[in-house]
Image (cartoon, rainbow, N blue to C red):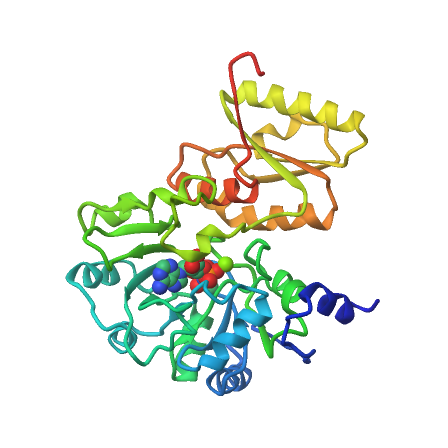
Length: 374
Ligand code: TXA
Ligand code: MG
C-alpha cells in the first residue's frame, strides 16, 4: 500500500476527504518569503487549509468565518465536530469583532499577555459560525506572537481558526516534519517555520463565568494570571481522567490526547525510589520480550538500560522539558516501542502544564512509589 492509500485507510470510511497535493513552503532565516505567504493567505481566505507555526505548537489554519472551512478542518484532523476551534487574530482590536463581550478582566489579560500563548474564552459574536465553535455560544480567541503566524493572519485579512496541526489523538506537532507526517495530502499548504519555541499548547482561560477559570494549563501559569486578575481557579475536571460526572468545560480536554502508541506509565514519588522502580520494570519488560522506552531527566540517563531512552531536558529546566516533550512522545512511536516508563517532572514553573500533558499521554496511569522503590 502506498503512503496515500495508507492514510486514507487510516482516515476511515466517514472521511469526506479526497486526496490533495499539499504544498510545502519553507521559511528560512532570511525572512518570510512574502510571495509564498501571500498565496497561503489567499488560500486561507478562500476556504482552504494552511498549517503554520505558532510559538506554542503548529496550527491548522482555516477561515474562521466560513462554516465549510471548519468542517474541512474537522475532516482533515479526524476530529469530532463538537470540539471547538481557537480563533486566531493578528491584532488586539480584532477581538471586538469576534467576541460579543470583552470584560475588564479580559482587557487586562490581553494587555499583559498578548501577543502570546494565552487563549481567552468569551461570548461569541454572531459573525463566528457555530461550526467554528463546535456548537457553543462562546469563542476561544488567541493572538499568537510568532511572526509567521502574525503575518499570515494579517495577509489573510480574516480571523483564522486553528487547532493543533496533528491528526486527532496524536501529540501536537512542534516541528513541520510532524505536521507533514500527519497531514500531508489532507491540507492545501504546510508552512515550515522550524521548531516552535514553547512546545505546549496555549493556556486557556474561560472568562464567561463569575471567576476566571483555567480550562487548560500552559506556559502562562495561574501565578502569572493572578498578577493581573484576582481569584483565578482551575477547572477541577482537568486534573484527572474523563469522568461522567465531571465534564471539562474545554470539550477537547475530554478526549484522549497527546497519546503515543505504546502504553505509557508515569512514576511519581521520591526520585531515587522512582529510578529503582523503573529499572525493575525495565528488567521485567525485557524478560517478556517487549521493546522498552524511558522518558527521563537528562541527569538520570546513566541509570537506565533500555532499548530507547529520551531525555526531555535537565531537571528543573521546565522550558526545555516543555519544548521537547511532544517530540519525545512522537519519537517513541517512530521507534515502535511497546512500553514507555516515564519519570515525573515536578517542582518547576510549568509543572501543571507539563504534568497535564504527560498524564494525558499516559491515559492517567500514575504509579506512586514509596521510599523502598515498590
Ligand atoms: O496553542 C494553542 O492553543 C494551539 C495553537 C495552534 O494556537 N491550538 C490548539 O488548539 O491547541 P486545539 O484545537 O488543539 O485545542 C483547543 C482547545 C480544545 O480543548 C477545545 O475544546 C478548547 O480549546 N476550546 C476551543 N473553543 C472553546 C470554547 N469556546 N470553550 C471552551 N473550550 C474551547
Ligand atoms: Mg489539539
